[in-house]
Image (cartoon, rainbow, N blue to C red; front, top):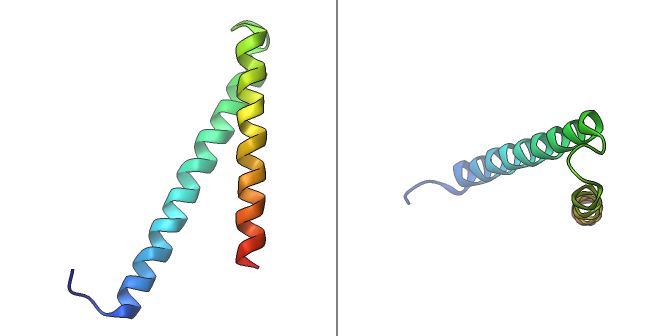
Length: 68
């Protein structure tokens, strides 16, 4: 790939932003669906999803701390 360092840097930033947007969108969508759905889909499934969300949030917090 032939491009200067500055161009590469901006591309990386753009990609990172896009990825964050996608991830955030997925998470919020899932949370909203769970709130609306309530216990309709089965409580066990719900609990697992919540665990995953908690793990994801912890990872994101760690990433943000690393940036600072």
